[in-house]
Length: 88
Picture 1 (cartoon, one colour):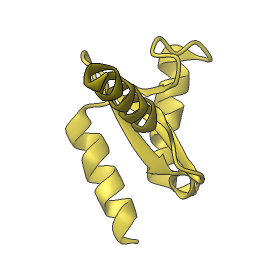
Picture 2: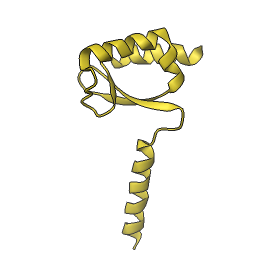
Picture 3: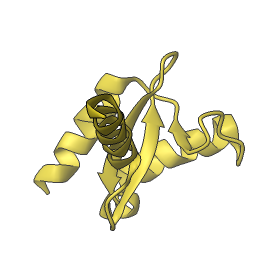
Picture 4: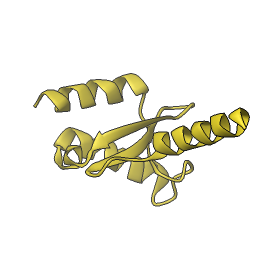
């Protein structure tokens, strides 16, 4: 019985980690290995972020291999841009 409870708890935690809070968007970032980030929707209006979206459109069009929005830049650049946006 204890194993079943642990498995249920583990599965429910896994589902929660895949959820995206209201007002946010999950994106996949990286040049070779993709990492998932959850960002506020407000970032989409920023010119710096819109440039990343244009790069994604040029590279992938509407077909994103990860199933979600994939941004083709280095993780470091993405973190720099989003860190700047979180301070404004």
